[in-house]
Image 1 (cartoon, rainbow, N blue to C red):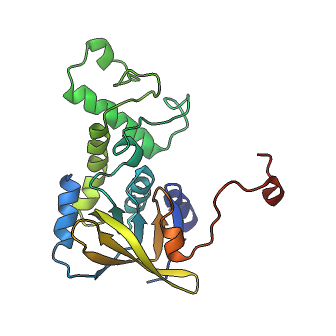
Image 2: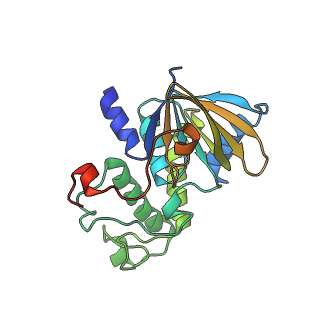
Length: 237
């Protein structure tokens, strides 16, 4: 994949920040096992660091590891998945989602959700044979399902890269500080909310996939809040 296309792929899941060159699950257990031997404030290095383990963060991490990059993914809680898991909100999708308007990775995720129910739940034959069946049978989404199912599928998709060492997932870690030199992010410091352990993460690229843009103030990145005026943007809305 060309560098430009790769950057587009990973930035689709979160804000991309360029840095200096340089379950309680199976994935959680593997990740914690690799970092448990590290000393206080140990420096961890990767090709890409993704801060935030919501859907955008997971998508960014998956895009990167699928392209051969070594990735560190941080999450403040012990559940990846954001909206579909922690928040218990079904996917908000376009009306044509069953046929178009989805990336290959998201299509794979949706298919795995349905396969999970077919494999593990006693479904009626007509439901089992319906390729578009809605597990929750609700009108708010075409794929209503339990948070624990989404979590299981996300872990399944990440597991090969966690076990190979290409992906490290740090649970209960929140970004607290960043070092910036000449508008370039050098590193991001994360702290474990339970143990207080601190780690310094370094990488050529950082992706802010947090819900509220946590890295913006920490890195001194210019940003605005609210809606821009039509005069500023020339846009119609």
